[in-house]
Length: 317
Image (cartoon, rainbow, N blue to C red):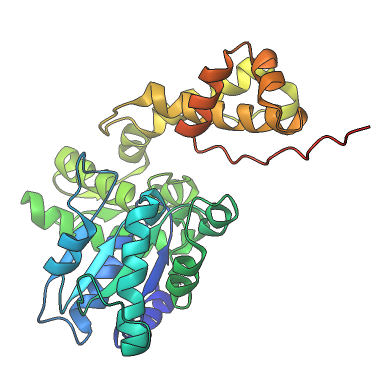
């Protein structure tokens, strides 16, 4: 956390675009707001856009105009389409390159663009799902937020912080954590990262209301962690079942929507990719193996953004 604070201080006064890498719940938006609040653009607007939360997000031109003079945070930048990606790239070019690259048409705004991602953008570039130059421009300056499970030494500090702030929010006395309670929370994997830890402390505030949080209190609010079984001892169906069960346990207490499509998409894409690869990207053969109509396969390839490699032309005898 000390290293992160120093990195934020260093980056706040730069004006180049910046990429924040980290899983959901690691505090990406908080870091972006802090960059804005201590930087030279703090007297202008901070505009936040999350394509995953908006059914019909406003156009990129509108977002850039709203953030003129300030900061535009684009969360989950990998989920932004190629058209909006190009508009963001043009805005970065104009701000960085000035008149040398300024195009004759389009909106010219003075905005610092900060993007957040929880996926490997380099892989998205390789799959031709993300603009290579935009990735290069954003990645020139980056802040990486490690998952909470990779920094358990920060858990006691966060517990002390949220034990005060969340208690104040709900109007109860500050919570104090017994050593066994802290040890239990340090051993937990925190799939929801800092956001999940804050939510757990808030629930403890509402349940406990005062005094010391002990091991039993923590066990009542943390999802159970099942004993791990070696992968090679599981059948395919058992592996899928275990994954889904763990997912449902992690999401307990959080709103769940479109779970069916989410699970199916995570299985369907690698399945189609591997079958296409095995058939030399012959879609007719792949459709036969999958038991699909060829047109249905084409539709799924487009929906899941499956990368396609054109088969080499057959040589005439």
